[in-house]
Each structure stands twice: as C-alpha cells, then as structure tokens.
Image (cartoon, rainbow, N blue to C red; front, side, top):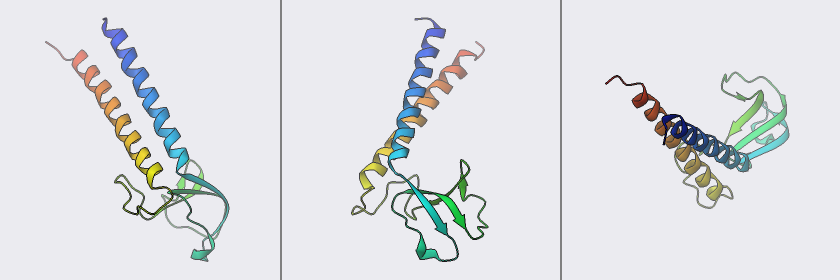
Length: 121
C-alpha cells in the first residue's frame, strides 16, 4: 500500500472518530432558554453541558462562552468518568469519554505516521 493511501485511510479514521465524538457530545448537551446569573438556583443543570440562549447578569468567567453560547458545565463533568452513577447522563458521559479517547488515539496514530514519513534516514 502506498504511503498516500495509508495517510488517506488514517485521515478517514480521524474524521469518523471526530464525528462519533461530536455525536456523543450532543447527547450530553442540554439547550435552555434563559439563565439568570444573579439567582444561582434559577437555572437548571440538567445535563453535563448546559447551553443557554439568553443570559441575564454579568459573568466574569472568560471560559463561560463556548462556540458563542453561554455554557455551564456540571460540576462533575471533566475528562475523567463521572462518579455519580445515579445520574441520567452517566452512561452517555461514559460513551463521550470513550469517544474522546478513541479520537485522541486516531490523531496520535496519524501524527506518528506523518512524523515517521518525513523522518530522515
């Protein structure tokens, strides 16, 4: 198999893994209408990732906006699996973390291929 063909196969794998990761992320994302920052209990954290259309109040956190939308994460959401097994999103969150790992692995594999391809002999 030619090197170009092998690179195309690795790139296709990266695209597939990225799409799987985005699909899994969409399953743990909730889209809400309003968020009142002055009253912390007024908005609902119903999923791992909560995006709000309208925000009332001032937010000083520079990481609160993701893709132009105000985003609140569940306190247990992160790169590690959630420890709250009674949460409705537990299985979906585990699927998302597994999809992230598969994507990172595919990117690393392609990066290693390119690195070895241009390595001088």
